Amino acid sequence: MSAIDQLLDAIPIPRMVRVKQVFERPAIDNVELDLLAKLKGKNSKLLITPGQSVAVAVGSRGISALPEMVKTLIQFIKDQGGIPFIVPAMGSHGGATAEGQKEMLRGLGVTEEYVGAPIRATMETLEIGVAENGLPVFIDKYAYEADAIVIINRIKPHIAFRGEYESGLMKMITIGLGKQKGADICHELGFGRMAENIPAIARVILEKTNLVFGVAVLENAYHELCQIEVLKNGEIEDGEPTLLKEAKRLSPKLYFDSLDVLVIDEIGKNISGTGFDNNVVGRYHTPYASGGPTISKIAALDITDVSHGNGNGLGILDFTTRRAFNKFSFEHSYPNALTSTVPLSVKIPMVLKNDKQAIQAAIKTCNILDKTKVRIVRVKNTLCLGEIEVSESLIEEVKQNPNLEILSSPFDLALCEQGSLFE
Image (cartoon, rainbow, N blue to C red):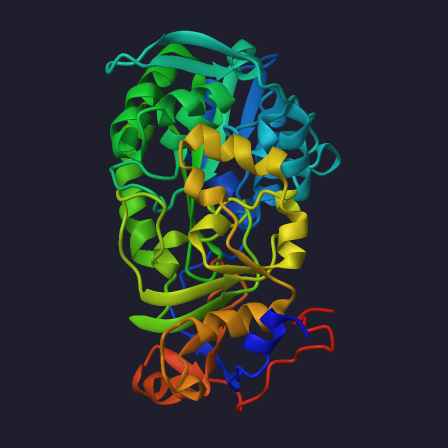
């Protein structure tokens, strides 16, 4: 038995109960029909003429129904006589390589076969102007050379700064379409300048390219699509802030102000920029964002396969497993941190041999005397918060909250002989 085993084996893991979190739940019944109606309602066809090549910019986030929306958008463009193709619009993600970005799209279900259009990926950019604050403006070469550009992205609060434009269309225009070079320029002076840099650079691209319209989508707290808006070029800058306010209102959360331990089953780039939504867990890698619960220790047990080893975000947390560590790819993680200028995100936390020890380490170090009364919440990831698990010590607090509902009797975590929660 190792010294680590001796220190952790006696740490008790409390029984848990399944709990339903209740959020406001507006939702779209038929995503494809709703998107098509919005496209037709905007007379978008007037902006695409027969024979035009159309670059459809798609990002790296796991947006609900993303493949279906992209497929619908591609077919709409074809129906107007356009010749669409996909360009990855994800800055430095995918290891800052063209093939890595293609793989991220495929992992999200955006394949050439399904959406009915080729994926043209390059890291090559063209400099097309200078922003009002003096920053050079770059854009994906294939997108710029197309006759028209269309973008699709989710609007949501950013995890590292606050502003009128956070995660959404303006950010995709600036950082996504800017590829690694454009993302690098936008991040160069740190996240304290992002609220200024994003609109300044985006305005140049909106003015100097044939970016005809953007599809903005909002999700409810259950990771379901609840609003789709089509914004023409001249509507994006004024329209996005209102959508961001609504996205913030609908954002998921944990209904606890403080916890001893949070266990996150998985983190990944398809979930959020830092692998998890910092706003949900109250841990940030910059001083330009704040909010959320106070949590003493956080353990992340795995990295999603779709992330291809991008473990961005692990450095903000306290513990992880050898399984996650073995997936961690320097080539996929470091370019993202070097571009964002925040190396904290890709530091390695304490690595334990399995899920059981990662949880026990979090409990041991959370600085409470009676470990049997530890306040623990376990979530699958920060996108799926409709159902969570909480320790017995939180039951009374759950009963007092009208937004929480107990779904089960107390149970022991189903750990296998190897100490894993997963088969």
